[in-house]
Length: 386
Image 1 (tube, one colour):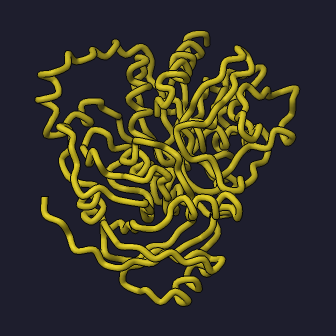
Image 2 (spheres, rainbow, N blue to C red):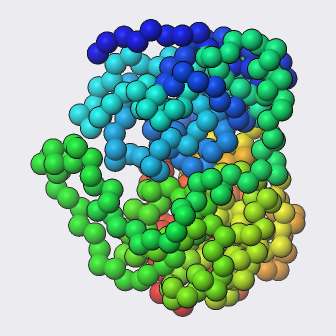
């Protein structure tokens, strides 16, 4: 594999902190909120997660890119991060499923990266100062100018990135659409295919930045899924005659999305509802609660969450910068079902009388690897009980 010539690159933060390294991916400039992710693997899923729209991601694992990129592990059609920040990007990749290198993949989609900086120092800085706006550039290495650009970026609080990542029209999701990768024939030759269960119920998924593996998990539970854009009215959703409604993950500030959570409020009591991540926050707001911004958010595959009903601790994958304020909820109507054991923030909600529940973390990401997988079956059971 030929070695590319690396160009100098610079990462400037709004507080004046500057990191100098070498560029990879696209040779361009990008800006956004800088956050860190503590996952050891899964960089491809992180990069293509629409929840990262508007953010530049620091991977704390020092070597990224060693197993390349493949079509089947995508969570959306393209990278969603504004930029990728790593200690070292692998010059080679080794995986029979891989179709190209991480470097080439980012370059093809116009996403810049920077390597060769002290990501430990940067992560500690973000933990102490909180998530910061930043600009990454390989075309402009004037530090003062880039710091000024970082300060001019809109803050994440109050920003709506959902409109940039939601689907443009409703569609029926077909799992066969996910099986077009060039290596699939070889994969099937090595592994017996897992048959999908027959469809038992039809649901509607509200796409605020939906990850594809959530759709796979819903289908494996026997649910046929119609995906609709964020902002679809409650009446239009109910016109599909769904047995249930799923509220997806997504980016940005949940409080900036009244066109979503007002419609969610209108759905309460109409059909069973299950929300994940931003969908959880939409339900918190629909219940009459409020949300707040976390200092540096939860991003990674090692977040411990306690299920208050069972007492069990689940190791979860998370990607969010906001949380539901437990004190803002009516305890007579809504119960907190899960808590984050690192900072005691709300990780799950359930309505006491309506068939509605949610979790802040990502059960489809399987970091435990299968600690929270029961939640999809719980949704189906809730539908059948109605």
